[in-house]
Image (cartoon, helix red, strand yellow):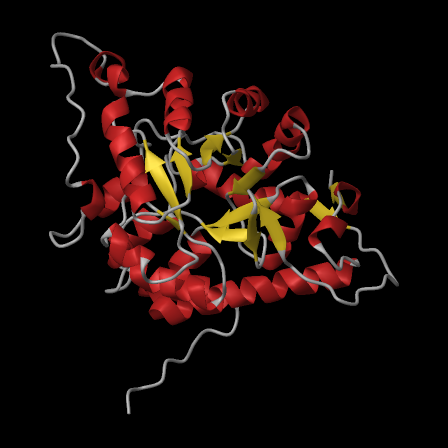
Length: 362
């Protein structure tokens, strides 16, 4: 009989074991941030400044973590965030993650930089039906990628807008991170790459060479009008940008700083979430990611206005430790912790989680 995997007992054990077992290169890529890592750290520490005031003696019969988003049922108000190159962590790659998410009925957002073919991942589970887009340098190439995802059965698109260029990631540079020859963004291989202007004299590398490949609000409005499925914008940190996304027809926004992997010194997502929700109104779908490590963090994010959250690094750790089983177990632990937080706070349903239940500590 094959040796039985001894799974970690807690989320913190997953995080510790993943960090210990990863190569220095993978640890730098998946677990570190841009620059000095201050934004990544701020995402987590923002939750330390929030307390929960429970309500007592409420009727909690028939309680549930179920919610609805964009007309879709969610078993719990969190999804697996898109991240690239799962095959660096497990041989089955994104298929393992999709299998783990399906086991817990949690939706997965597949990264455009998946290391497994899009159709193979989509067939691994019904809950892997959201797809993350990047702007591909032109309207034509971007719409081709979007159409490919829709044709494969992905009914919701998430356009990442906060990473027009890669952040300066010191830890990756120091660790010498490079993709191995057998891991790549396989679904992007068929698309033409943007052509950069030649570098001459003292021209700025970014502004003069690649600015013509970057999208504007008009480009995003055009994309939304072309596809027949909901499009959310991921990477919003300013209330006015959230309102602009709402005005051009985006189905929702994800308050995100790319896990602190792009612009170091960007604000923590939890810190800016309330102002964004206030700007667009309570009915507009505002999701959030960044810094969520425990089920109680999900509770706090929802109390401060998020309709749902995206989970990234905890899934990375589950996948690294035990493949699809690790992903499923991490999701189960998060859901159990979230449900306990609801029960102990006097909330039978997601709608019972209110802003006046959380308070910022001075």
